[in-house]
Length: 149
Image 1 (cartoon, helix red, strand yellow):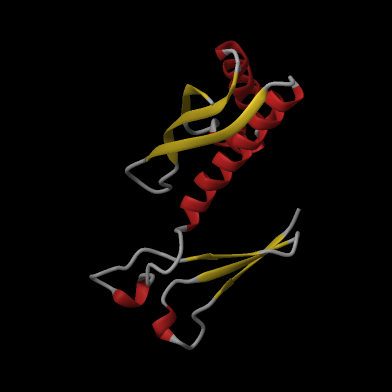
Image 2 (cartoon, rainbow, N blue to C red; image 1 turned 135 degrees about the vertical axis):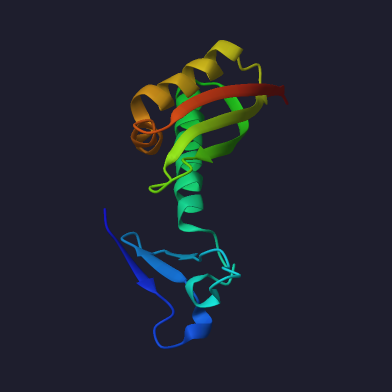
């Protein structure tokens, strides 16, 4: 896996702290920093997600992918899956994630709650590389709602 991240600012100081990532799979992702009222030249323009937001989003995508795949492989009629992630960060640098809450909403027909619980646990314990890495610094808690379609 590879990725190239380039600052979009260069000599154009109006570009702030924007970056573009070009992934090995041929996709691009924009990132930007938060505006800095005290030192505008050091802040972003709020034109894209913050880099750490993309880490959180990627973790959500990784675990949701696992949950859907595990349920489908179990021949469950899964029709939807969302995961809301809420993270807390350390107060001092490096401001790593210290606690991440993942709340899943799984929609389908006749899916047993035990199957959803198992799929989430398997993702968290075995398959989701992103959440397993983040668990080195953050306590990760999970919960879910099961919606009958």
